[in-house]
Image (cartoon, rainbow, N blue to C red):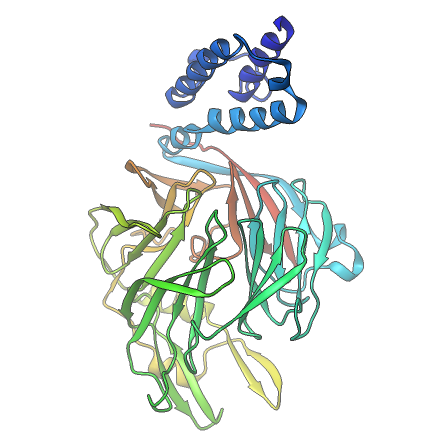
Amino acid sequence: MRRTAIGLMALLLLATGLIGQTAGKTLNDLPPAARKVFDGLLAGRTEALNGLSSEAFHPQAFERRSRDAVAAAQVGLLTEMYKTGSVKLVEEVRVSDSSLPEDMIFRNPRGIAVDAQGRVYVADSGAEHLKIFGPDGKFIRAIGRKGQGPGEFQGPEFVEIGGGRIFVWESMNRRISIFDAEGKFLSSAASAPFFTGAFGVFIQMRALPDGRLIVHYERGLTEGAGDRPADSQTQIIGLLSADGKPVRTLLEKKVRSCRMVWNAGYNANVRVPFPYHPTLHMEVTTAGDLAAGGSEKYEIEIYNPDKGRLTSFVRPYTPIPLSDRDKQDHFGRFRMAVFKDGMKTMIPKPPDVILENTEFPEKLPPYRDLIADGEGHIWVQLYAENRAMNVFDVFDPQEGFISRMTLEGAPIDHSFAGSLSNRFSGQVLWRIEQDEEGYSSLVRYRLTAGRTSR
């Protein structure tokens, strides 16, 4: 029992960072939240030693307690980091084509998910399969192949992990394919809840811890609506069951995201996007709560998928006038795919139908999008006066606003928060990056304190 007590004491020191990366520090060096956790664990563990049998210290049980202790001790560490006003991403692992089997190189990697064991799942839309990597970035295997049958993919884009299941949204097959944790195909859910007709847009998908899904989509044409949508669209955030069946609508909002314009040259309706207009945004925290907001005002609402609205956070902001530079930036980023005779062609610059029909608002909305970190904080990517893209407000879903901060150490673009190619796990960020020649890499960054302090 004495050896067990000593082992537990060492475990607690390791869990709180006093052994390892922060060797040489004392309890007083810990953030207040971590110190409180340490004190509580230490008191509880000492009392728990009385009367326990040796079965309580079975290796598997001890390993589980170790993970729980480490997780508990890390609570609050990111919060303290955010309060400094600057966070730096430090690269730890980079997976490029040179480190992959020849037949497994990245073709068009899109969505990322991370499971409880730290394995990373990448939906490769170009390769038509799901790549799986270990926590160290080493390639493990692939799931799926090109096709329309069960367990096959066409255009896999989003991947989510929840409730012991893997969910993959396929843009070309317009369905969610569902697999068990080992990669065995279970079922698929048709796109009817999302695409009631032409021009529907699937925007985002997130898995809840229990395996249900929250999806964000823009409703398409309903039967009898004619051959083109109205100039305003309806975006919906909906709850799905673990087998992909619709349960209920959580939020619904009218937005002005695009206009469909007939173009004789393409012999088709062309979707002309309206940039910078307020729209609906969503993210799901590690606890399974929904954070959502319509960016016509700076308000973030927190919902429980079953109980409804829990709270909201409002921040003051001064609207920023839209500039000519903002318009140029939009057209500079613009890419358009055209299908002719079954062949897909990318147009590198906007055609006249886009230039002539794009509508811009007079002012920028308060924020670009939302993303949740590995502890469940909500990052809000802001529009800044100087157009810097690395400025974020950070919120705790229960306590509210924490701090405004800048993110350094890696390229941050306008769509960082809304990108399906960024995923936090603990104090790590996994993301897909492209070099100047268009080659993709899977990169792991660690969140560290930045260069400024308060």
